[in-house]
Amino acid sequence: MELNNTSAVVTGGASGLGEATARALAERGVKVVVADLNDQRGAEIAAEIGGAYAHCDVTNTDQVIAAIETAGAMAPLWSAVNCAGIGWATRTIGKDGEYASAHDLDLYRKVIEINLIGTFNVCRLAATKMSHNPPDVDGLRGAIVNTASVAAEDGQIGQVAYSSSKGGIVGLTLPLARDLAAIGVRANCILPGLIDTPIYGTGPQSDEFKARLGAGVLFPKRLGHASEYASLAVELLANSYMNAESIRIDAGIRMQPK
Image (cartoon, rainbow, N blue to C red; front, side, top):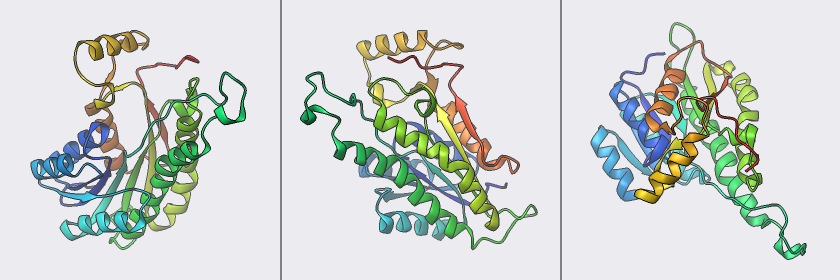
């Protein structure tokens, strides 16, 4: 699939995996809409890569549509990459055995709402926009890449909400691709392992913590780079024969219970 002279929406594009993907797509001649809630950083990145910034809560349909329309105004929308998401760590029941100390149900709903429902919201709206594109030689009109996590398959203690949300993203991949085949839009999913993003912080303590995490990776024994995720995301967009796949990028790690 030709990426040059097209546009893309990248959610969570102001940091980490999203930022790396936005930059990688811009290098391929794509006009990128950086969709995020961090207005200052998002606008800075968009200016650096010659794209546009859109303040976007992925659960807000109007804001998602606005981001998509911003992309379409720059060039035909052929790509969407979902990197927006949140994490949460809480065990299912409390140590005291009281109902009140069980996992907060509203927090569970919030993680599902942002990670899973937000991802689907962008998919359904971006694909609708893509359906208006004239098809290429293969009948393609666009492609979507969603971001799950190895936690979808190797969820650790305390990751019930997060793993549920990411498992849902894996689960929607095949039926989404089957739905969208009718309009020539492909859908794939990436399950990142331990990727070095701003979530781990900076400084000596952060470096020491990341080194300990990296020691548990099969090979190479380090955290992944956001650019490595971005490289795979761009390949899944550009390779017209990649469809309905969920691919781990984790250097062979299998997460232990804790």
